[in-house]
Image (tube, helix red, strand yellow):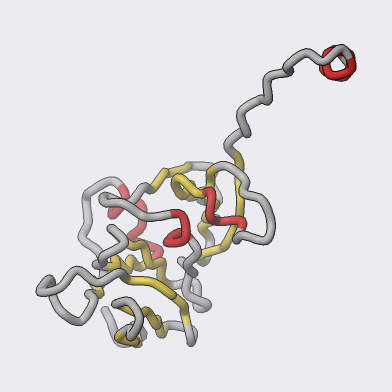
Amino acid sequence: MIAIIGMLLGCSVPTPEPAEGILSTEMCGVVQVDWVGEPTPPPSSPRYGTTHLKMTWPDGSERTWRPSGTLHFSDWDFEACAPSGAWIVLPRDRFCPLDVVAVPELVAWLDGQAKPTAILHDGYNGVAALVCGDIRWIGPDTLRWEAGGETPIVQQRDLSAVP
């Protein structure tokens, strides 16, 4: 009400900062993965305001994940969870690599007690700094991603045989 009166009188009314909240949710097996950040206006992806991921287990325990490098706003629009529920893929940086972690090992990995189940690169193994993007699961355990720019290198990996 005070804000309306202030506007009618021509006063400047401060705009509150947007609150951080859950922008999107995905299930990785029994783990709920929330993209957390500030909402962005349509028609942009809801995930573009993401600052980190929050993971919640059935017992209520939670962990937060942030990339070790930099992800730009559009880099957050990826599919983290395999349709099988067995895997989660998390980019370390916008230039790769991608860490793929078996969901049962996720707590240990997030706590720094385990290595990723698989590490996926850009195809150049560090010779060139290529942006990894369009990270999508194209099968129950098969991941597809692109590395590059105008002419990306499209790669895929079936993780069903990974121990």
